[in-house]
Image: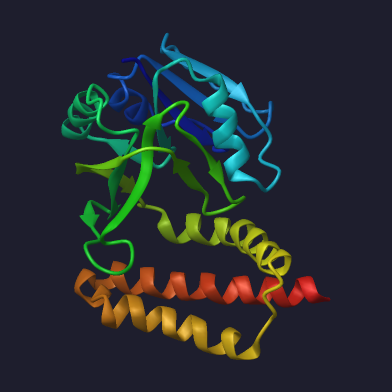
Length: 242
């Protein structure tokens, strides 16, 4: 079974450590949001493709599925890293004929400190699947709907967030606007109650109920930023009404 690794990015460059961590893949596809990025990559396995985002992350991932040559496809973001043990487990998993896809356990890491609590402390994402097993849905927070049994790989996929405050705020406007449009299209009304209560509830959920305080300062900032994200979606939804 051959494996295609896909990196979706609009960043100025690709981390060479990420590319090195994907050396076990048969090909590496880099999908870039626009033709203005000129990456200098000497890795012979790499294939650079251009596909505009157009506020639709699912469309970019489905485009990569169409262009992949492997029997299996692994999706990795440009701020993630595949450890040696995870790479070994992936190679073993794709030889198993019982599953059509696998969840990966994503581990957030801030300045070499893993965030073990909050809503991201135990997150599992469907990132590995057979190329023809299904497609992605939803423009943002996209989900890969796979036909067949789905298993789970135990080793973590590391999500490196050493600049997580600046990166979070820069993405907030993009994600918030797309999310708010979805709420409008689904005829979910703007509510002052949700505007004031949901962000506060989101903070309490992550920092108190899901023990984000155990992650120290990083856990506090993580809970705060997730609350601000919830607030921004409601603000953009209010703007859509106008």
